Length: 238
Image 1 (spheres, rainbow, N blue to C red):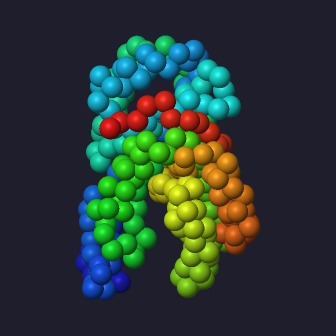
Image 2 (cartoon, one colour):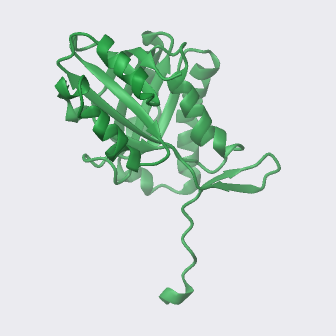
């Protein structure tokens, strides 16, 4: 096929409306996760975040008594190298010690069957980050093995349904909700996805990860997971 006959590239997010017709949306949220050490008091950080009116959340690291992490949301990726960059290079955040091993950048994405793309890609992730009931969080990246990509579309769908069913069951029970971000080409370790597990208590989030270990996707087709950041909310944008 000559270049002149190639079909146009369509990178819009795709869903399927209640009437079964395909829908599209050329909008998505970018989220960046940054971790820091050398924080003996998170109150000045909270005050600075309130004054700056950032959209996101601040977590205190359960595994590091001087650790914190910040997740920030924007539809425009330039925001992270302009407004956010300037904010982080001023006190009090400039006095902290960055932990680049935890840095994650991802984007919301559609799987092709969402009936409401604006809700799935924009509203729902925002509401979960800001939900005052979801006080605990586990964030981590993962990379799928090449074996998954070699499966047929039907085989992939069955595996993903098994995996996703666990998340839906925990969400329906009010025990935990997930945020799934694609990070292809955005991650320095070549990870494919960023996962955020958010809930009112920590144990159910650990249980989600444990239950996921038994699925075909995790047991057969995941090459790498982590590092894991575990923290509790110190601040959320309202």
